[in-house]
Length: 163
Image (cartoon, rainbow, N blue to C red; front, top):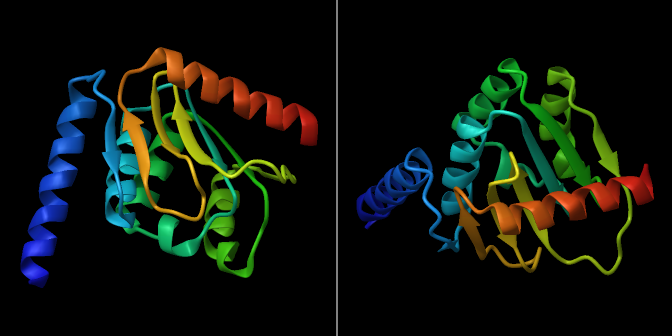
């Protein structure tokens, strides 16, 4: 059973990688932490200009994956501008917060009580959008300017209000 789950995770990551490599406009869903990680890895691998992270917090279980951290560090080394906005800093955020700070990425903390979603947006074309921060279910796309621009604008609006 565990081997089947591992095979399914690898197959999902391979499919996500193919979507991003081909700059697919297909919007696809994801509903597990492993799926989210696969998408985030590809977003950071393909980012050329910027990545914006808007999240309720930076839960360790979501951001502790070694491959994801390598993809983030590699993006930063390529001079990809990474900005992070969270609504609440928790004890479980310490390790990932320290990781971002070691890279030189500032984390903006500000309250937006009516906001219940999380998202990552990159280069105004790639995104992962989680409608409810309490449920690991999201949609993502490797190449959708319309949705990505809206998320980018939402991030900027949040930053102006708290910055």
